[in-house]
Length: 242
Length: 206
Picture 1 (cartoon, chains in turn green, red):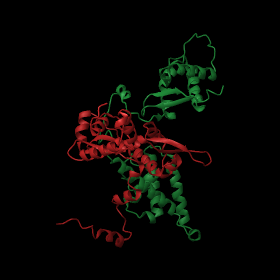
Picture 2 (spheres, each protein chain N blue to C red):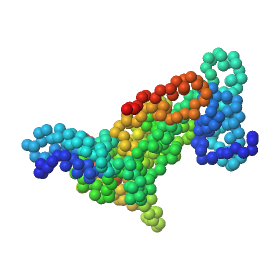
Picture 3 (cartoon, rainbow over the protein chains, first blue to last red):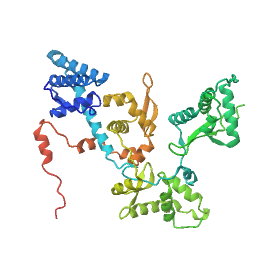
Picture 4 (cartoon, rainbow over the protein chains, first blue to last red):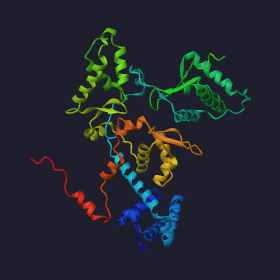
């Protein structure tokens, strides 16, 4: 080691990044990497990182093993010829692909981004519902459901002490309750349904019941806009069944 | 409603809409609110109006009419970004290099699994993926039919809106990007690289 290697610590995101840096630094040909030299440099960097108390992630070590393996294969001329494949080929392919997507990422970053480079009309949340143009309803994703669940969960007061054991509810009862509630009003906010719960147990039950109803197609879950409120509506499905 | 100039209606709707308006939603809204005897050829008029507006906003305006995420939207001219950023006192969303890289891998290779993304990036992508999912730029599109049935990921409509793309096919091809980026090529084949530099296409020199 020459004693003064400059490392920008945040630069390397993973072993491929580091390798690519080493390749570029010395303007090496990716297809013909001097594996012995690069392995040496790579390991030097790892030692350096460890010396600086940087937690060297497992991926870095796995790549070190790969490099050493390739190096050992290069030392065995017969094995090399038998396969008729340069042991470095796979590595070169990965480096090139990695490089390509580094560039693609940079390229994407230079696009005219909405909210950064170009702007469109934004309206306060309340007013958006009044627009007459029907936008197709967005199906709410599991993440949206979880988001609402988490929000309500965080608002939930801690369970009261000295509470007499409530009659435990079953998921079936909860489902009936939800359907009945929706029957009254057509559609309702997922949050409101969650708020009917008196404790965490019921809240969990409520979440399960909503998912189960959706699975049975008794309930449609949707949003009117991205990140908007999650709404529930009864469907007619399965009503004729019994 | 009165038979106001269709173009004016279209323009006003685009002006007030918060999301890109698709042609079908625009057309059906206008149609529903037009007396039955005046609906003849209305869709064609709307289509024409969109074309005209697009042309009209092309030059000399602070806003442009763009095709994005399968719809139409009025957006500010890119050149005015500094003004608007100041005006809105916006803290523009910054995308980390890792977010952009991950996003580009997903955009080009979708649908694909997280393991496949990580193979390209060479690092664990849990945190980045979490952020992209939360922002709604990426979504789960299904499960891959291999052992373990890992989740498959793809980009969303919000992704298209954010990047101002009408459809995913509007992204430049990987080959184009590869060619676009200047490389510090090693001295592999000086003949090959030299040949490329010889003659740029003759521009109008007159």
